Image (cartoon, rainbow, N blue to C red; front, side):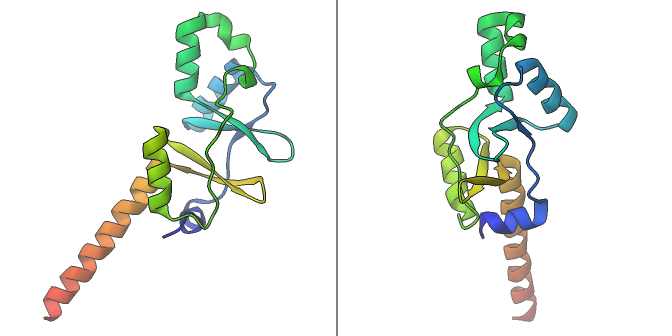
Length: 143
């Protein structure tokens, strides 16, 4: 199964934030949208970075409340691992596991077209296992 399959089911909407916005704005957007990461992108939808709840907790631990007024670009992860729609779900799982992160932006022709989270991957994998069990149950019932 591919990333495109997951995006066809979940949709391609991605909440982004410009790099000049503040951490305070990022926190509010994360809370409002009930998400764990924001892709930092320019007006052209090119990925510049990603800012996650984890990133924000780390900067708050170091700098305290003063960090809320600082720009997202000062604290984002700039070297973002991305994938494209043709990636296999197992490959994305490996990227997440090895990199120890939970969100992978999906890029086509250097433009952001979606995002895959660990929750999306787990949901897909559970559905896949359930389909396999159903096929086995049907096979046993007809044998």
